[in-house]
Image (cartoon, rainbow, N blue to C red):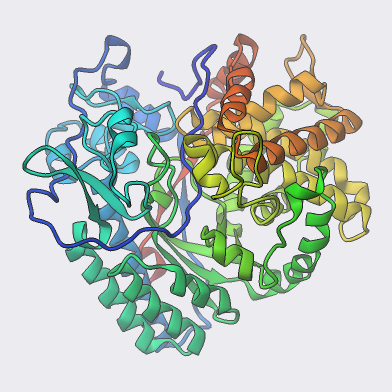
Length: 577
């Protein structure tokens, strides 16, 4: 049976980085120059040979099926038509993401005769298992290229570093070769022009039906941004939009797909229906961001930046995931925009996707706890704690430092994202995880959360680590969790009973470890210290035999690794616009 276990003694390389907006439009190029970088076709090793059909069906069963729906009875026919247009726009991101992740989708699927394997390829947007360290599962396919389709397959890191292209690190450019074999850059809005024109048209049609003026403005500006690669104005418009009951996140956003440098953004989308009641309950927490920033356990220079004042928290029912959002482990909360300038001026919006979150808690977290958490601490596994930990993870993305403050040998200029390069994304996820727990603790101390239930947050946090490390070495969240697991183990934050193989949280030691790791990650980010980031990964990124054995127990208990969606207009009961 093919399961998603991290290899023993694997030193996990952190990859990807958070987004900023520094791409510059380039002149149009020829069709030859727009040809995608060829996908890897090297023969797979014997250890990675494609599984038989029955084994592939088992791998499909590792994903629990979740129907994405919401109560739309409160929307009139005009609004329902608008929602249908937004779903169609979100769906268009799938075609572009296929091009970025693999290349020609139809050509790949036509080569696969087994229906279960074909279905698994569609789920993974290519022939590599995203939750099994990118293991190939199609005969004749080699390792997943670290640079996906963002760079020429034959380009070395040295060639990239020596290139004088001014926008080679830009979020929204592909690197290709001209007729002479020289590296050139191709802007996204030219490379994916036909698909983006379709998406922009759908967004503009939806804008005509929008009742909320702010949402109408955002949709129009986002449509323009898709055709220009200039997203900052639409990000500001999105931050200003507070009251609309429907939302869409769409465009090239995260850089996880680029495991070579972490520079290039992938297209993704979410369509969301706002839970007005829950959002109102969450709103009060945003006011504490400046105070929490000032209280971070690091010297003043690492917390001198002030979180934007317009940050807000809201809960949503997700009704569609597209592109990068729909591959691998599914997101349960969103913190955007990634643009550092927007964050510093306006903050970020934190969107809790409560229906997806609850599905993961019930179908994955609770079964994991029954297998791996001490009997007397299983009562501390609660959805409220899971919701809070996830929510404050997203809030914590807005804390800490966005721009390098400097260290010996550094000039203190530039973003943390640029300084930490391929390490940045996992470090940012690790920071958000640990500072999320820190914020829960501080708010409980202030009386804003129930302090008597703080142990629930700690035990649920540990169960969350055990859930996330199953995602595999190719997932930024999993890598961040693996480093934290080993750091906590070293600090005695939890113990493992040898007889039962169950884990028990030590509250006081976990609090101390939380503060120590918070300080370490924030300092490395603020210093922009790439060498220290890599060293921490090398030291804390190994999976030992004991943990591997415990994860295997989860597989033997047939606990799903993650979820997959039933989604679309039919599921929502909407007519095609």
